Amino acid sequence: MVIDSYGKKSDLPIHNKYKPRKFNRRLWVNRILIASVSFLVIWVLFFRSSSSSSSSSHPQPTQVTKSNEDDYELYTATKDGIVKQDIGGQGQGQAPAKAQGGEGVDVDGEIQPTVSTEDVLIDPDVADKLYKESVEYYDLNDYRGSALGFDNGDVVLFLMPLRNAENVLPMAFYNLMNLTYDHSLIDIAFLVSDCSPDDKTLETVFEYSVALQNGTLVDKLQQEEEEKNSRSVQGSNDLYQNYMDQNYMEGVRKAYKHPEEHHKGYRKPFRSVSIYKKDFGQIIGQGFSDRHAVKVQGIRRKLMGRARNWLTSNALQAYHSWVYWRDVDIETCPGNVIEELMQHDYDVMVPNVWRPLPTFLGNEQPYDLNSWIESEPALELAKTLDEDDVIVEGYAEYPTWRAHLAYLRDPNGNPREVVDLDGVGGVSILARAQIFRQGVHFPAFTFLNHAETEAFGKMAKQMGFKVGGLPHYTIWHIYEPSEDDLKQIAKLERKKRRQKGRKI
Ligand SMILES: Nc1nc2c(ncn2[C@@H]2O[C@H](COP(=O)(O)OP(=O)(O)OP(=O)(O)O)[C@@H](O)[C@H]2O)c(=O)[nH]1
Ligand SMILES: *[C@@H]1O[C@H](CO)[C@@H](O)[C@H](O)[C@H]1NC(C)=O
Ligand SMILES: *[C@@H]1O[C@H](CO)[C@@H](O)[C@H](O)[C@H]1NC(C)=O
Ligand SMILES: [Mg+2]
Image (tube, rainbow, N blue to C red; front, side):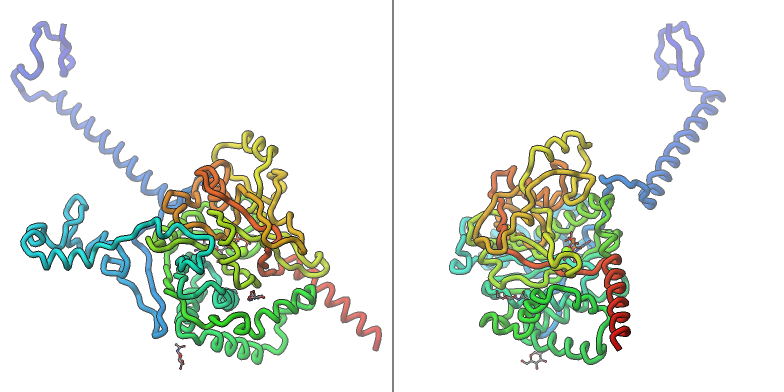
């Protein structure tokens, strides 16, 4: 027996389509019903997906912030000014991936050659021109990165991520000029992201980069400093300096007083300076306490990973042998840091990172806890965590008992002593360019319960690369007084004033 679509029993074994099609009211009622229901379902699905993408109410560490990959700006700095690069395809060193106005791109998004193959076959001049314009030959064996890269002429890609960094930029540029690795062998690329509307990081980077390439940045920075000093007689912001270890402060003054004395090539322009501007949707504040709350670490670090990867992918060229990552907020660092990290012939190498503290807090402190040697307790801890959990170092929530590079420091130790590491911090990383070419990156997802730079170290190691750190070679992160520290300083100031009052 066959039950036909009209819901009527039919004794005839005849398929529906052979039946005479007559108008049937119940059929049409059903069809309209089905159509309305489908429409409703589609509408609900569409509405829900579009509204949920606009309200990001997923406070999970896996949160993925989408960003429009095309939405970025690239500038290069020369001594004559800033040049905005055409990233639509004509830009220098850019692959002709996208033609403007849709020209040259067919419906499937495939790129059409601008010169037809027939022309090439017919006209050898056209072929030759095309070849010269579009084909560059690199033997990557020449760019493996030598431990004596300076003598070998290895080009280093210097990468610095920036966010709301206006105030620390003078310091960062003093540190740049202080690099003794031949400036003409260093390409610089900044990535400026997610700055507050009133922040002037991008504009300041433009200004300083032009002066840097013009050889006049020292003069500019010193002039700016003088102007600032004459404006504010005694900056109340700098009050904390009276509470710092005066030996340390003396060292800082020396480092900045006659900067050019540190090496001959101080004013020498760099091979190139590029400035990328692209937002990634970082919403966690850049204030000290904001940045350090344990809950936000996973999300913040993954987004930073994404930003770092984006910068590497865009800035890395075939002729680069080394990549040097550097944070903006380093106060003092030996000028030969690149050569020092390089000469150990590791694939990834980091220095120790400490910071000074007010004397009432003990003068100094191991700072970057992201460089460490893996431990059994941490591996056991990882087993108890969700696959997606990110372990962050230096928080009571995660007792890892790892050996931190920072704590291995002996101020009188041999600065060339090396220890092998698993996780690394991002403050100052020298890495062979080839490890990025082979796929090592800064995970923007949880990799072995880590993210960003620590996961980068682990991944490099997992892929068979050598990862190390220098426990007794130290660079110094700035000290930014926390709210508590400022309160303590104010208290000490009041006490001082009372004592003075009593003496009179
Ligand atoms: N492009 C980009 N750069 C960022 C972002 N957040 C921080 N940075 C930069 O990345 C570097 C490190 O940032 P910090 O805020 O010092 O982060 P951190 O080193 O993890 O934290 P600290 O240990 O407090 O120094 C600095 O050069 C910042 O300017 C971001 O969201 N986007
Ligand atoms: C570049 O240097 C010259 C002197 O060498 C100076 O006069 C000029 O102002 C500088 N330009 C910038 C943009 O710093
Ligand atoms: C510049 O390098 C010298 C020599 O290595 C060092 O003593 C000085 O502290 C460095 N300057 C800064 C600002 O770090
Ligand atoms: Mg920092």
